[in-house]
Length: 150
Image (cartoon, rainbow, N blue to C red; front, top):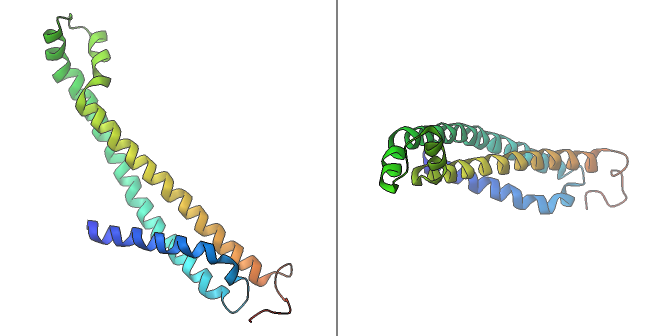
């Protein structure tokens, strides 16, 4: 999927998020099916993005491990020699977290992980909204009011 298609999917998630503020409007049996449908679509779009975000998070984790290995084996010895430090396993381990490529890979991993958690929370939010509209419109605690449908 292209970045343009993915960004339009994020725009849809934002649009559906705005509908959460109007959840009380779906508390009647006339509007409830429309709102429930919207939240089902929102869950579908969000779960699609979540799958992509999970894939990206796994790729970022692999790139982080690769960056750490390259820092340990390739860049640490030269850095330590330049600093006048004896090259040892412990010294190389100490260098790895300071390596610019490792730091960059940690940043990319943090972004993908944050996106994944945000989408998981959105998915739960839309699921709860769907269930809330259903309860408000179709259960005896909320339904059958004098003004329903007006």
